[in-house]
Length: 152
Image (cartoon, rainbow, N blue to C red; front, top):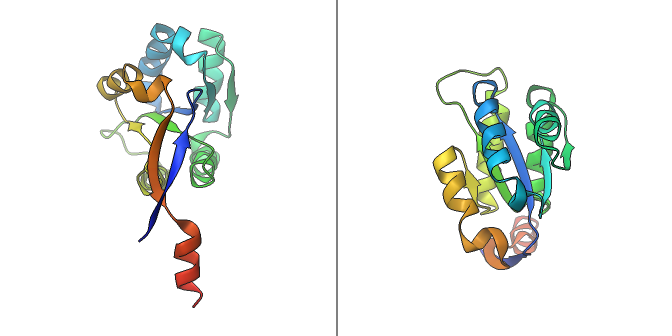
């Protein structure tokens, strides 16, 4: 696979997602980091995004609820290069009916090499890093080369 570079701007496009048992934890994290989060473009799955907006006042674009397609909507945005960071407080101890969507979201984040935090400790490390507030280049798959090879 060939790779190319994608520049993440200082103002990031950040997706916020949390499973039911971790929504309160993500809300607390967002409240604690409200000032820095307000400097970025935020989106989230339906319930999580709506709760974050209601509890913190942060401007957030809510997608559909995760089980109704919100995880897939965010995955599509990642594949289109429209999400720079994923903060996903994922609950590995409770099964969710849309587990294939969750795995697909995490897989796409890895394919497109975007920073991902799946717990509070990693979210704290990420928000304190230069990646969060500065321009940074990341390597991503060179889709045009990939497509050209596939249609030969």
